[in-house]
Length: 174
Image (cartoon, rainbow, N blue to C red):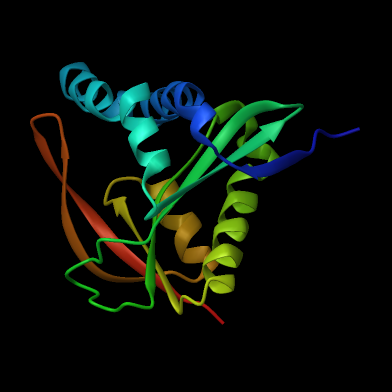
């Protein structure tokens, strides 16, 4: 029987779990195409328990964890503020992060997390969901475009000492 996954809202006790999962999934997604120094600098400032704890306490952030047999295999983060300068609309919400352990991507955990976030945003009255994705992350670009996201701009994403270009995508919620 194939494994199934569940999605739950993260809580304050998940700070260490999210730090580890965030570190692991970001690293496995981008280490092959970035310098170890830039990766280390970004990971050390982003995926540490103290930062995760602060984000979990932030009323403008909401994390969701995907689990297989109670093991965390992916996560997503919705962020209500600040708005993107390129999209100054109060009815827009950002899907700031969505990552899945490479070993579980064939279970369509990413699709499940995406659908969960789309539904949460719509239930909360948002009309638009937007995100940034590295211009060279072709797998993610194809995923977002398949779901119906459209490009509307770009901004700089600082990875250590490397300023990278993220393309901004948006999708109207029905």
